[in-house]
Amino acid sequence: MNFFDKMVWGNSVKEWGFSLLIIVGAVILNRLVVYLNRNVFKKLAAKSRGQFDNILLDSLEKPVMFGIILGAIWFAAARLSMNAGTFDVIRKSYQILIVINVTWFVSKFLSSLITEYGGRINSRLLPLIKRTVLIIVWAIGIVTALNNVGVAITSILGVLGVGGVSVALAAQDTIKNIFGGITIYTDAPFRLGDIIQFDNFEGTVNDIGLRSTRIITYEQRIVSVPNYKLMDASVINISAEPSRRVLITWGMTYDTTPQKMKEAIDILKKIPANVNEIETNTVAVFSDFGISALLITYIYYIKKDFDVRESTSKVNFEILDRFNEAGLDFAFPTQTIYASVTNEK
Figure 1 (tube, rainbow, N blue to C red):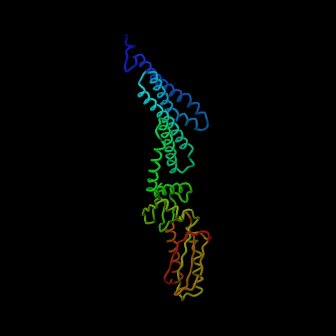
Figure 2 (cartoon, rainbow, N blue to C red; figure 1 turned 90 degrees about the vertical axis):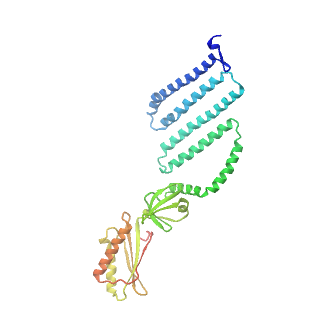
Figure 3 (cartoon, helix red, strand yellow; figure 1 turned 180 degrees about the horizontal axis):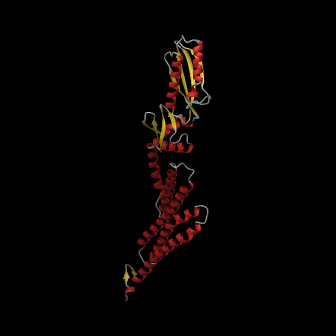
């Protein structure tokens, strides 16, 4: 008996050698696949206008190589003599790996497509979409692979269903926040950098996450608001307003003459000429006879690109300077009200 006829684990050395040559041939074939893909197919794909061909080739390369190796191992094992139990293990492993390989290709392909053609999607929402798609693809792939080897999927799904309900009940606030974050991304009631007013808070939107939105108030405090609360409440987007309305009501002493009241109104109407931050469509009226003062109401609009507090301060200084020069006396109390209504212009 020569060396090649010697039996090893139920097969001759020659049979083991042929099986090994099949696997080596698969490795060589993989090298050829890489060469053709990178030097022939991709150069042809580069001549096309879109990126679809390139995405397909990039997604196929490694799964095809893995598939060739799997096929080689299967054919190499199938030609050998082995007991039924060992062959059954190899067969089931092969069936699982084939499905996993196909799932790998589909996930790579869809992920690349979303990245390439998802430019119109909010940049913070894109990773969530990709992750969701990949979870669905891999879930289908794993279930299919287990089903192919005879695993009782219905019982597993039943257990997962009961567990899923328990998890969903425990995490319902988190789920609401995630859907709230998606709604903010898609509906865009406000964006990063916008000044919004919510509940008792007003400030700049610093971050929009999947669970919460962070707002920096005028006092430089960071307030984290759960997304579902923002969706259930009225949120005023101050940055979306064409201008910010400011209403001031104050009183003049009762010894102020009608001529002085008219002079006060004239001064107020000329304020926009001296303060560039406000628009010209102001309203200044002798609004009422108060309990202890003659009331004047002044409405003006701060232009969109100016700081509200700085502009308000300039207007107040201008009023104080002009009234003092004219000898006009303020009564008490004086009240300032900010509002977000802009349709009165």
